[in-house]
Length: 528
Ligand code: NAD
Image (cartoon, rainbow, N blue to C red):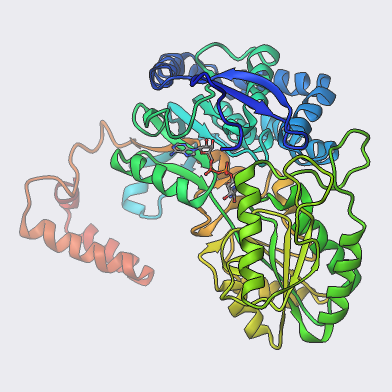
């Protein structure tokens, strides 16, 4: 981890990745404090759940207003501790959350409302009815990464709280101060009661397993696939369900009918926003051979215009990487590609004169799938570009990955775009754009293959935070006091049920079945 604890083992020093200057110190929670937070959250659960969705929404709307009042401070802090320019902090972190709270504070009531289950069997539905009631789960743990340190945890926390759960939150150590800002937003700004929400700054390895075991009822983890698998193993031992939002290696396919100027701008933004440290950034591009040279030339030209540095005066496009480890992975992937025959057409090194974790936006060509930069998650400012000769080849290359988070297809023909989108193994495929749907709170965010399990955002993401309990009611008493499936069993009951089985298979048999049952005269005794 880049932000090493200083000489005191319980204190973490947060630093600015652009300048390497310290920003503040935070005390690390012990494993016992983590366990206590979970116990407190369990104790706070019944009262919070009893508030109802509208009662809980009021707290979140107050938190939203607090965010709006302090928007500049929040964007400043995100930029300083995480490195991204303030415009990205505003659009991809703050706006997303204020919008999500505004939309779901209203919509949650409808999504979480109980819903009747229409029963199709005429014998059952005359005496029974069924419904689903959405019950909060209890304690939910939210463990999040540093790359979107405000919007990623907040979206999980907001959904969990709105649905009636209490939350224990562990932010990434690299963005501990932003984690504490979230605590301030919810507890001071929103007035969320103590115990209902608790933030713990803790080292992932040292904090123990309390966030992944009962009484925690759901784990919402966002981070790398490797750590996600470890957490999944612990949770699985206790059958604690998880939402896992994990790594990606997102492909971009540029068809020969694409607008090459538009697509190259999309590729440069998709690969280099947040310095490429985006789970859904463009990590590999496949371009129809007819467009390849022009596309590469435009990407190189546009990349050359990007401004690197610390955002002091809103005149920077790309900030530093978040930590030394991430920088080392970026360098290792570029070196591996070069050793296997790739060529660098832009970037490919740390920029001279900048002290922090900077790396130049890098374009690579002559790449192939023997290279780490085409198969492993780089999570840095790399744009490797490869030509293809047929759509089948493009789809095969796009799907040649253990990951399946998002992907994009670029074409001037919408039907073609949709047909290709259906063939790509990814949780989201966008046509003529990339990754931006994270900002649309009503669409699902989800990974296929090793990119994750479950979903966040959207109605489906909200439903991850509740248990769909089934309640079945009886309407037959006091008229019918037996059930055809109860004791005693008899040949007669067997024959009647056999007729019923046949009748239900074919609706045409229903009248015959009813007549045969009715003519027995004693069908009530037999059935009930
Ligand atoms: P990470 O897996 O190293 O850490 C994520 C969180 O887990 C942090 O809070 C960390 O402190 C904690 N952690 C680490 N080891 C732990 C352990 N042994 N036990 C418990 N907790 C532990 O990921 P990162 O480096 O912070 O973030 C980058 C990764 O996150 C990338 O792989 C990226 O693709 C992924 N990510 C995915 C999404 C998505 O929506 N799919 C979004 C953002 C980031």
